[in-house]
Image (cartoon, rainbow, N blue to C red; front, side):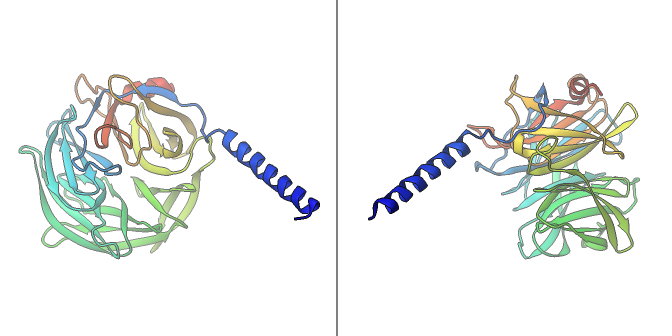
Amino acid sequence: MSAIHHAKLLSSFAFAIALAGCAASQPAITGLPPVQVTASAETAPVGTGRADAADDPAVWVDPANPNRALIVATDKKAGLHVYDLSGKDIAFTQAGLVNNVDVVGDIIVASDRNDGVSAHLALFRLDADKPAITPLGRAAAGSGEAYGLCLKRTAPGAPITAALIVKDGTVRVGTLAVNGTPTFTVEWEHKIPTQSEGCVFDGDTLYVGEEDAGVWRLEPNGKAATATMVAPVDNQRLVADVEGLATIDHKGQRYLLVSSQGDNAFAVFKLPSMDYAGRFAVAAGAFGAVSETDGIEAVAGNFGAAFPDGLFLAQDGHNEPRAQNFKLVRWDQIAAALGL
């Protein structure tokens, strides 16, 4: 080896060491500092003792008693759980690989990943008095792996509108027929560029989270949709992955909540303007902190002394030494911390 070649090798090695040192010294990406709140309760852990099992929650509110509510949530390796607001697990049904879930009336709908080639929606009926979950069947929903799912809130007895998000970013919105064999009739479709999951309706408008890119607003336009990126991943308000989405009304204003999974926080935006309203994180208190959140839910209402002005739910990606679970946070405490 020549002296010149040896010197070049040493120089290259030193440069590589310097680069590694620079990379190691770089801090993890974090967004704008979130205000801190703590959970008021937590659910029992899901039954699957694997690292990634709990995924998405929904809230059923008793139409005969608006102060009463139950939580329906997915163990995406096994099925559906029902919890009361103390977090007690009061019902479970085997359903295999169900990912996201939502509730309208007494109908529960989940994105069904048991067939990774052909998407399905799994339907159930909630008997809140027993409580129990009764399977109603599966509705075919086109090709691809079923992933994200949300329902449009409708008047009692009206058809159920569902949005299914296929893992590749294909969004299908249509009507669910519940009586007899369930069917899903697609009314419009839109392709988001890459993997997407979280979604929520605000009237006819659909908000969808593209995990690496941000939040899209989809406005139906015939058989397709007009799409606008309204909250990009900017490592300030949102740090990838963008995961669960939820809406809530507070003092006459509607808000969109977004799981900023990359830095364990939640961004809040005013609707429909998408003006930024702040960020919060769920820190350790009487219950553990919340991190790497997938699905979220929020609902306004008076649910007793524990949740007098509404409820925020978040899947907790790290609940060691137990399996993953869901944390419950008083909405009034979040609103106060954000100055809403």
